[in-house]
Length: 406
Image (cartoon, rainbow, N blue to C red; front, top):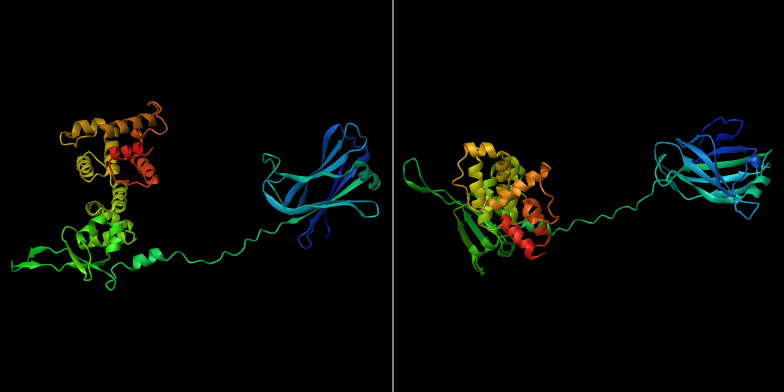
């Protein structure tokens, strides 16, 4: 270890020379005329000029204190980070006498010094009681107290290597069973349609074949499972004629834990809503509905079409989106759109949208924290889901469910 800096308190001032050996750096802080520094009843801090070590600016604080009933007091030593960055170091203090002998030595544990000015004195660290003042005075060198500050950057805390544990393979196992002909006990024939050939003769397009498992269908789509009836030793064949093969592929793949790509959701959102609604796959229905709402621009030209569809399919989020548009554009809607064909039972949805709009503009009365009547559909669904209940339903159904289970 070699000298990094010499810092003088009172004259003379210090010259700084940075040096690093095995990571340790030291600075000498010299308190000239230490015996003449009068202790006070209580505490008095003596601050050194700034010095540089390990890339940061520091100053040393010496604390002089005496007990009211004693002529002698304790001396504390503290290190103060004066830089605008946090740093973690190992540090200590050493007091030497005129023979260079260490009179007192303190090596402290690694400490993180916060940047200068951090609340709670987190930019300071040290020892309240290093030695008695009389001991320090006996160690003076020509009236100067020499405190050697030693520090080095603390090694980063080594975290033990994380043990490799493969993810639970069960989800992948289920997905690998999708379209597994060998283990399937259900066969769906999808998409048989009657048409006319160029010769204007009746013809049939070949249906697409999908292999499935009754047990998985019972958990993922009870409606599809019911179509299959009771499964015996022989494979059960079921005909599906109201869904295209592409849509049924998405439907069945989802039941097996698969995902529908975003582009496919956008391109087939209503077809997926229709199929998922028919076969009781609620989560897929809600995903397709959310995708439709996020990717569709409501206008006065299409609002009635979307409103009627949302009401028919019980798509509460889509209905909310349309009603928000109506409330925000009420004058244009009243002027250009006939509302005589609007579905019934919209009053509660409209009032909820109006209340939210007024609150947004700062005109509405502050609602209670758990006022379900003005909550957005996503918030209602989240609360119902947290209770482990079915979230596919109208605003009224969701509110009734929450009230029943509150």
